[in-house]
Image 1 (spheres, one colour):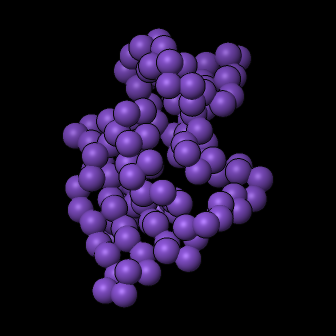
Image 2 (cartoon, one colour):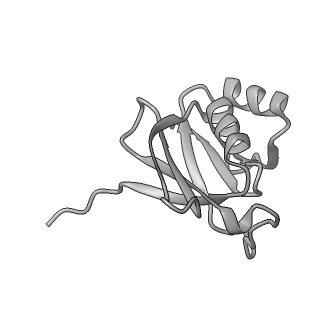
Length: 123
């Protein structure tokens, strides 16, 4: 029996804002979507050509007027990038770098809903 990592869910308040961020910051584009018949939620799965991994953005109608409670926000996604300096410059220009750890050689960006994403150089 083999388990293969498939996707990770992130709840978002404003789907279009999040789609724009993930495309601009990480080059992730929609690959499929699903909407509830009653309009209570919409799922959009994002991916790129570099990996089979997908991020599922879930937009819940009941959360349209309030932020999600992210707890202490210790959970995070991580992306490895081959041109770390170019990625850092891009994210600096976007204004989304929220934490840097030069000692570990990584930094984090923050999405529009407050989720942190670790950017790691290929080593």
